[in-house]
Length: 264
Image (cartoon, rainbow, N blue to C red):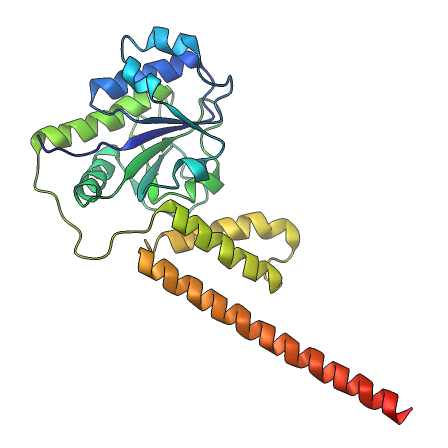
C-alpha cells in the first residue's frame, strides 16, 4: 500500500455531535484521520461525539475548528464539494470513484487534498462550492434521496480506500500543481476589489452572484502559483493604469478651472 496522506474531511456547520462521532468512526474504518469542522452548531468539543465514535478517538482528538469554509480549505490544493445538488454552478460533477482517482493522483504528486461536506439540513452554500475544484455526487436512486452525513463520508472514504488497496500507478502531474486555496482566495479578493473600484458590480444587489460566477469561472482554470502571481500582476497593472488616467483627468480639470479663474 503506498504511503499517501489521505484527503482531509471538512464538515460545514454540522449540527449533531452524534453525526460528528459517526463520521470519525467511518473515517477511521477507511484510513482517513484529519477532520475539520466549520462553525459546528453546538460548539466544540462535544462529549457525545466521542461516545458515538466507537473508539476512533484519535480522529476527534485532533479536530481543527474554523470560522469559515475559506479558512478551512486555505492550505489545500484540491478540494471537492460533496453534494446532491449541483445548484447553479457550472462545475465538473463526478462520482466518488472518479473524484477518488483525482485525489489519489494529486496526493501522489505532493498536493494536499480534501472533501467538503455540508450540514445535515442546509447542505453547502453555493459560495463555498465555488471555492472547490468540482462537485462529487453520490449516484443514489432518485426514488429516495435521503442519505445521512456519515453514510456520505463512508462512501467517499471507501472509494479512496479501495483505490489505495488496488495501488494503481499514480498519474503524476507533468505541469505545475494548482495553487493553494489561500492564494486563490487572495487573487479573487484582489480582482473583486478592483472591479468594485471600477464600477463593475452593478446593480449592487447582484454583486454576490456576480462574484460567485467569477470565482467558479476562474476556479475551473486550476491556476498554478506562478499563474496566480501573473494574474495578480496584470490586475495591479490595470489598476495602476486606471489611476494614471484618473490623475490626468484630475489635472486636466484643475487646469481648466485655473484657466476659467484667470479669465475671470
